[in-house]
Image: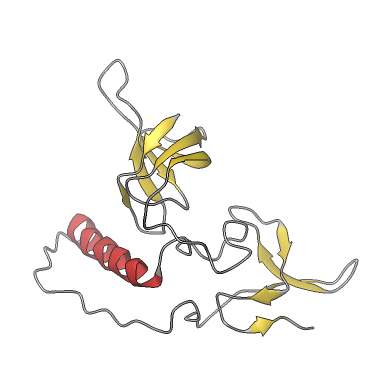
Length: 166
């Protein structure tokens, strides 16, 4: 199904809506690794009443904000959701998501500017949860995105730690 991404939401997914059905209702679809304004051909998984999760099968119209991810494991592991966005723009999106979340959940209409505290781009993780595999040989890695399947990694680019060694 061809969808247009409206905005990013908490957790990094993009929000899109299906075309209205016969009753005039549309369904919210949460799609990872997208940007607002992008048009994506989406495979929609069966969802709950009112929303579903989707995955991009084809990026039809790309955002000019999209950048090449710095990590070779991006979209494979479940760690980073924003590496396809420049770091400066990530901060802006996250501030907007915080503002909207405060308004939607806590009913706080924040009037003040949100003060951003940037860290060095890309090497800002203060925690990572590595998985350890010992057979058939020793390996360190992560879980693949949205699964418990092991993904071996040779280096942890997002944490800035360099090569992983036993």
